[in-house]
Amino acid sequence: MVSDKGILPNVITYNSLICGLCKFGRWDEASKMLKQMEDDNISPNVKTFTALVDAFCKEGKVKEAEAVINIMIERGKVPNIVTYNSLIDGYCLRGEMIKAREIFDSITLRGLVPDVVTYSSLLNGYCKNLNIEKAEEMFHEMTVKGLKPDVVTYSTMIQGFFQVGRCVAARRLVDEMHAQGQIPDQCTYGIVLDGLCNNHLVEDALSLFYLVGNSKLNSDIAVYNILIDGAGKNGKVEVARILFQGLIDKGLQPDVRTYNVMISGFCREGQLGEAKLLFLKMEESGCPPNDVTYRVLLQGYLKNRHYDDVEMLLQEMDDRGYSLDASTLSLFIDHIAAGLLDRSMLKLFGKLVPKELLNDPSLCDWE
DNA sequence: TTAGGGTTAG
Image 1: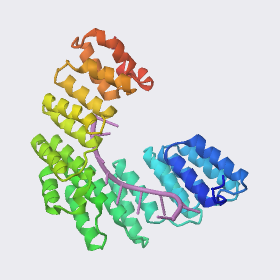
Image 2: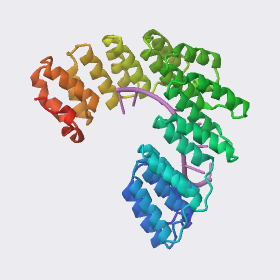
Image 3: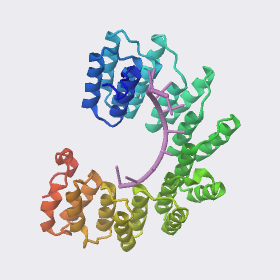
């Protein structure tokens, strides 16, 4: 691997490439790259190994990540705090909080010092696994240790409070982060809007949105996706429609999630005609439907006992290589069992059941 | 700007 100008790759070049390949799950190529790196007599360093550890952890493959850590130790490279933070994330992602805590506790024994990211990662794990008390403990403990919660720490904790319905505590924390000089960013904003919507406070979310007005914060399609979904789920599909039109008028481009939440909102209200129109508009707008779109629409049709387009949608899913997820599948099974669907559809339907669901005990006996 | 943490659809 030599560039046109005869420049040789170094450890930085390889790390960048390996990291990029890992990010896209291209493990084979990443491992080939690692091998080539060694053939070039360039030793992988702590960052190289940590990139691999992190990539495995993000897929929940903690055993593989630990294997990489063992290899790096064998090669005389010492894992650092970044390496262990990734591992904590991996265990948190799997919901294995006892193990995550063990890694956290082992950090000090290894002579390393947990940093803001370490605390925030474990705190996030506790929040995601709905153990808000433990999360609060971490939040408190880090300040005792002299670590200052940053924007990410606050955002994580705020989301945790919203998830368990503690909206007052969440809002108080937004004020506190301001007072501490940690300015909420785009991500915090999304977390707050989503948290309000999910706690039946969509009016508050909308007030905040209109208060923010034409700021850059509101030029993010994710903000619209959150609000359109929130409005729809709170029975305000007309508000959702206005928001959708608003983002178009503003020159923003709806993405596949925007369409999906809007279609989902129409289906919820039984407005299947509107849902179908939007579905058809996706392709011509350069934003083709994805597997979620099909599942949302199918669920909408089934729940509203509107079977005209079902076979066509299943056929299109098959053509596109999409499959049914567990919840759509179980809805289908109910309708088949109740004799509501034409049995001629069964063959096509069977092709869309993913292998991993074939032996699912909750879905058997449908024939 | 060589590796780490927080946001949206089913």
